[in-house]
Length: 373
Length: 57
Image (tube, rainbow over all chains, first blue to last red; front, side, top):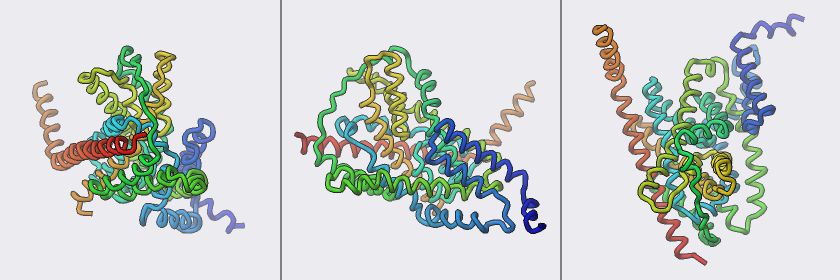
């Protein structure tokens, strides 16, 4: 009888708090449908990792730690494989028909660098500040990849923040967009002049982007390469079954493992720190400043351009695809039910995916160069 | 009151003096990073415009 009850003595208050946090993530995933593909496995994983065990790091903790070592610690395998699936899901057509929209994708990464500066002010060392800043990329795999490469001590908090805010885009962005734009600006109509993009362009694009990024930001090649590989599988037209597998089976399989694997860093002693709350706050700042950056560049372009751009599309430059594009389109329709911004905002949104990966690679290159990693 | 304001001022200066090098590094990364993104994106935009011109239907 004593053998059956002895593990009760290993329960600590910190464990109970983590069970509640895990339960909250599961509740948000199921009841509020906030990024359920990641938050539910993370929530359950957090519970698993904080169940009392006679010896820490054994049993289920050892299994999840092993998954973490293989999938994230050694070569960031899981986020890279997930990017193959994401690349296969993305249609770059609207962007290729109007490539100048990419400038908004670039502008909407401003929040990353602003947050890097802010995190440094708060006393985080450079590798952690950079890892926290990449929450602003609004891209889970990129955030995991960068935080893993920089061996950040706050990976779990960064992941929870990144995926939570990605799910909160429909709540976070609209007030900022309305604050940064006037009604007159929100009513600007944009003609969709995108023609048909040739199949050859769609095939050469992923190859060209990978090579261009490799020359400037070699640390981003793994991310951009796998993303563009997935896109090439989609666009080549002769690998429909592989494209289908990448978009569905592969993406789902890796997502299952990724969510529960992140929980390896959600042990109470690593997660329950004041810094976790600070990281949540900084993550929100990154999203807010991203949105602001995209809108401001659109407003600046409008000063010099005869053909006015609706500045709201700048907000779609964050990588949260397709939520951000839908938010902008919906806001446009709210102001004027005949104002269809979807094709423009989708183009900007997918450019944000590319820009966020480039931002991640540049941050890695610069920080590694300074720290000598 | 005058001394209080001065003390706050000195505290702020001490704070930034202590973190000065780190803030400077972060600012440098921020500046170079943003410039780098625009440069890379600019090159990609040019490449796409060229592709559209060459392969336009």
